[in-house]
Image (cartoon, rainbow, N blue to C red):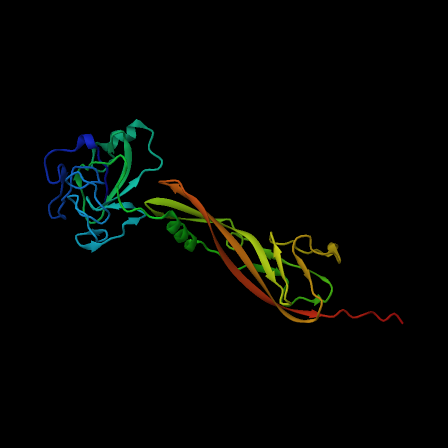
Length: 294
């Protein structure tokens, strides 16, 4: 696998493919000295089509073996059988452009955009014409990449600090509810996915919904406030409940995550996805005993 870039003004007229030279005993290079988004007859190449500008119905392939049309390497161009990825950010030092004199260096097309070119299965010598607009491969929906990035995120169920299963709780007394926070249980946490463009997804808990097991639910916009002894009989200022009857209750808390995503390289788009994680605890409610003052 080689990373190669070339300039339109420097493509040689000789050799197979109009300037592309294959080393001996390497896969045949049937490449056209045209923009990577066009066929050999300068007609737009359709996604999945081979060289020569003719349309096709098959997907992306190299010598009949199917390959992904988009990946972290960039967008596959079926004309030259290579992946194209726009360099972000573009180099600003003129010396970077001058390194294009060697096959290992970068070359550029007028007006000078640089691409990383990856050609699986063979090593290319010489030059390829670089399309200023980039490869004309099949587009991929950024939201698809956003969902892939969301799947990479480590989002764990809420870590319930209170109420505890071994705690002592009384009917009619305020119950304080809160969860412990970490990147995986509260956020923010981020992951990225690439395929033509790069999408970064960042997840943060938006709210917590507590189902108290007595037919009521409590929505808290934060993790809750930890109880301290100096609070006495006060109710929680952010997330609490009061039971009216004794007995055992299953308390379930669900964290509602918002996953904000945006294209961070190769385009401009954004959106929001949602997901949830839940946890539960069993609590026992006892009746307070009246003091006998006689």
